[in-house]
Length: 431
Image (cartoon, rainbow, N blue to C red):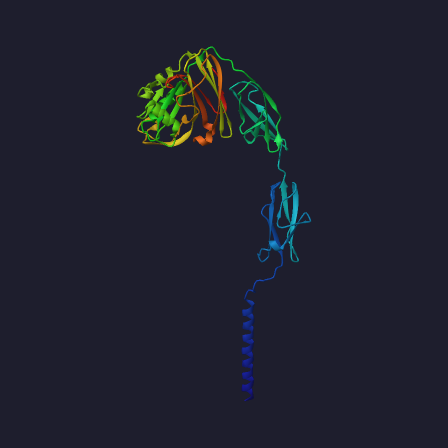
């Protein structure tokens, strides 16, 4: 009986011992839960190397990845700053630390690069001596604090005889001395002096001619005339074209007025010197246009044009070797490089029913006179006529692609006596 009790006790003890060991092994295999205690903070910045004048933004997180930036304080080179955004006062190296509660962050280093600044500007002119009606172009070069230089022509304003211009080209309109300087930011350039002289007239004038092309993007046969104009331009620089658009986005009151004045009803239609229709097929009759600009005549033109922002300043000079009664002046503004799809029924320009992004040149944008001309003084000698044209209000897409065509026409306005053309910011003298 005693033996049984002892064996029973031993069995119970063994069971308890085994259970206890098994429980301890089970607890030891479980990963302890993560700590929820902040033990450190980490400082970072949105940049570590940047230029003078820029700002840097700091951020602080705890080891638990919680953002505590707004509750942290910052020191730059040992000096406390307000907030977490800092703009270094000068180039150099900076150290930054942050504090939060009882913790101090890691240290980060910043490099602030010196920025070269413009210390002076110098203006020069393409011409220091010019005649009335001619254009001179200014160039401005800036010198930086590190000794480098850069062209700042397009970034400057110009002061000509104490009048401010927003363009680097100057159109001489009267004889005498002209002073010019440039300004950039708070800097003013050196001052230069231009000498403008009177115009000398030749004894006779080179004959020029024009082609007025009545056209439209919808007109499938019109590329034939465009092609023919290209052939003329390849052969001579004394024939100027005008694109009078009808029925498309480039039509305006001036092209419509021309169409009405000349009774145009079919397209394409082109006139040479307004006096004769260009014979069909135009590409086979290039000589008709070229021959219209042969020899000399007793009336001539000089044209200059410069930009002041979106305003085109134009000076047209007329010269008469002898009086020609009833002569009128026509002044057109033309634009090149306008891209628009063009219908095409011809084999020109590679064929195809549609010419995608076809380049339309010498498009009539504005007439500073009546399309058939305004009366002018037509006695022997010289006359200057000035025009100020706001290009932005006349459909011009790119002021840099414009030019001026001036015509001397007879009393009817339908016979061209002579013509002259210049691109903007340039001038063409009597010849």
